[in-house]
Length: 442
Image 1 (cartoon, rainbow, N blue to C red):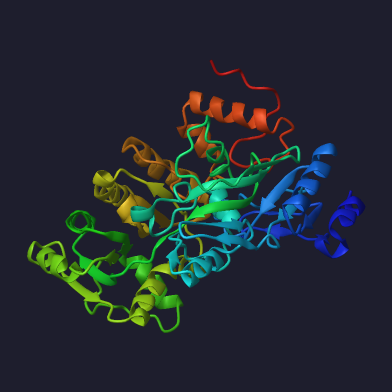
Image 2 (cartoon, one colour):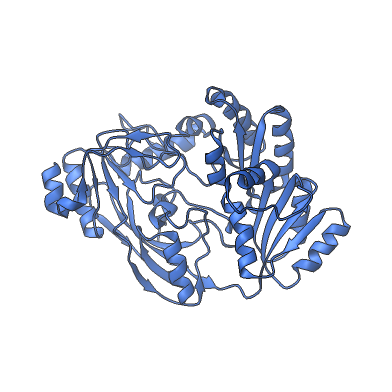
């Protein structure tokens, strides 16, 4: 098998005797090989070869995922998409890019044309578009622009048998049957390998302003959000999250003097943010605020927010919860969860504008099951989701089975079996491997 892969790609692009580990260091596995195809045709050839030999495949982009979705368990062929890094075409309203392009490269290419690709993540320098789409990435600007699913017009996908589906259409409207691209966005490589995408582009904001604001509590932050207009990002940051950044990131400084317990980082395309903040201060929703006076100051404030995951990692182990809550009930979740976990250190931050919180608990690893059940049961009670933007991977397969209905699980398994009957595409991720054909859904 190794010799056949080397014949297809060249010996230098078939790596053996490697162990692959996820970004958080929780999952490791020794693959049969890591292969580095250069284009869609080579990806298809590798997949076809693996399918004919019943060898499992793990697609891998920038390996920045947080749920172990791109890590082999052992014996698979890891297909790295790093060499599929061409920006094929840029138009006024869309671009066609390959899956190995980093998010930062796509954003830069759009900016050079005076356009905006708004997906924005802390890991955008290494995260790749294929991974962004396979996990339906969110980030800080979902409030205005939507997540990866809303930003995608078309896809090119290598199917589990090696066939290539070319769905690279740049249409906003195409009502000609099932929207097939939606099957692969968020599927974490379990139904096929995304090799290229058509992405929406937008005008660059004309009056972008950034503010760091102190609020008394999350309820006040929600009231402030409802007061504002043209908001592109609204990030809630708890005291402990910022303290970790101040501790572990050199040159980081607290933007405000009084060390408030709750802060919000706001970005808006408006000329009247200062007036809105003044009105919110009179209403008791804001206790202090600063507005960035330059692009450099704005970048400094955003660096504080984007450094939280790295600071957490430097601090040590925490049980992480990537959750979403209906916006109106988000303050209730924080209050009830904090009460239930009284005495624990809570690192709470996230994209409050779209209801997505990262609610992380510093506690021994042995407490994971108990803490998860407490947090996720409350999320479920409030009509939320236990995975807002990080996906399922290996980490949350049990939660998927616990909280999803039998009908939803049957539908997912039926799709998996129909598209990947051998079960060789990223096995062990999202759903456990199908052994027999599921009961048909009627």
